[in-house]
Length: 355
Image 1 (cartoon, rainbow, N blue to C red):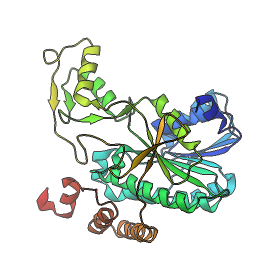
Image 2: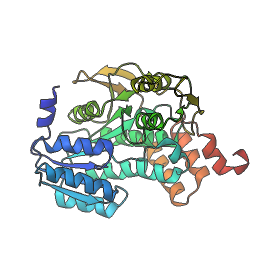
Image 3: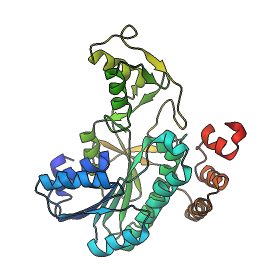
Image 4: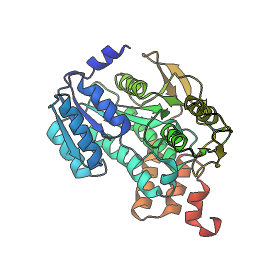
């Protein structure tokens, strides 16, 4: 499906973008703004990010939008947004994403990424939105981080609601798994360049560590392609090239700077951070990759979670967060996602003697 056709899918639509001020969200908003939507609703919890996005759209002469300071965990606000604006399409980009930081903030990340998605999707269905697309991550596959586990819970919730909403007038709910966005804030690219510029050693976590990288423009195109699908209850995976070794990436940036390693600058192995994996994956072993209507995307087809079990799990997760009971939260997550392996950092929060 060509980019020009993807743009027309948003023409004349009222569109809600959550996490609108983030790296992906703001790039997505600027692309959507050029596709002649009826109205854009930009939701973000960062005043500064929302202010910057507001200035960018104003500079482009755009006026058919509302910049709303808040987040998806504010249920009355989200309900008010749907009642007032009646969004037809929701691009759900709001998420906590920094893996090591989230290992120390387990309640916040699960509440935001998992329960926030669940409630947003239920609200979208209640108001009869046409479609909702969640931006997921390869870290949701066989997760070793609680961030990845939280996104897997969100995927399972959307698959369940998407299956339940199959029908002509129902909300189509899907997710797209993406890798690392090259150059995004907090990613290895800006970190390595900063270290090189300052003449400091370049820090690589593991000699064999590898990641999937996407350009920001490519990321936006894949998101819009996935949102245009007529499926419901599907997870889409990009057809991209081989993963890049972080060590090779670091050496390339050093050479681009006109330096040599190890003579001019060192590469230091720091060890995997809490929640890190050596290699990321885009699909579970029991997920079959089928062609989709867009040549850039696969549709991942795997076993479904029992609806009653999922509802009970989400209830236990919600209760454990409300009670700030980490043991109960991890137990519920491990029961719902058997592949999830909590990090030593999380286990040490349960038992300080393990730290």
